[in-house]
Image (cartoon, rainbow, N blue to C red):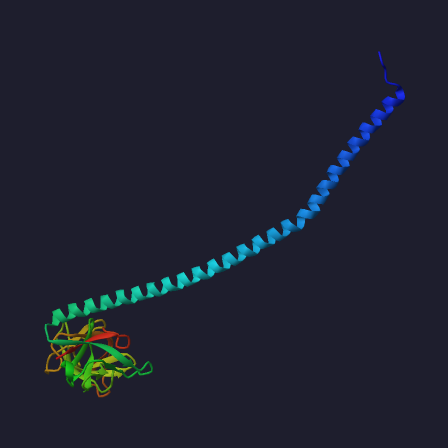
Length: 253
């Protein structure tokens, strides 16, 4: 039987060992080469993907901001319409309650620095509004028309010092004269010196003239005092209707 010599065995072993080392070395080199070659590509792909995602997110955020802004405007518009609807419903109930012919109007001019009290409405003689027509809100008397044009009218509020109207305390039926006191307040004058006048008492129109129908709420008493002469009492009134925030009013014909 043929036997390999020791020298041939050593050569064969050495050849196999070299082949194995070469394969291992070549495999490592190939991996290093692939890694070195693919790393920039992977880096470029990652950067491109990141930049693309960032741009997409920026565009999406801008779109969402626009959508939110549009929705906010719609919500504000809805609230304005809801509030206007409530005010108009309240005016309609008030109109039914007083049972007088009225003309609805909107406040179109108001001086924010006018502490005395006046504004302009968008109705005039062409709509049936006349000078001295009583002007009301859903909560009560606001004032009267002092100048009526064809399509607009100027209104003097009950807080104006030039305003005067007959009035009475709703429960006790004590009569007096209401005049403006400025700064959002009015006063009822010439109350009997011995009359019991309490804070919180409601003041209404007395109906002594054709200008102001009887029973329209003016406001409630917040303080009571005596005249300088001591001949009568007077009381400061907080109007039931906020004279400086009305948007819609009723003019009594």
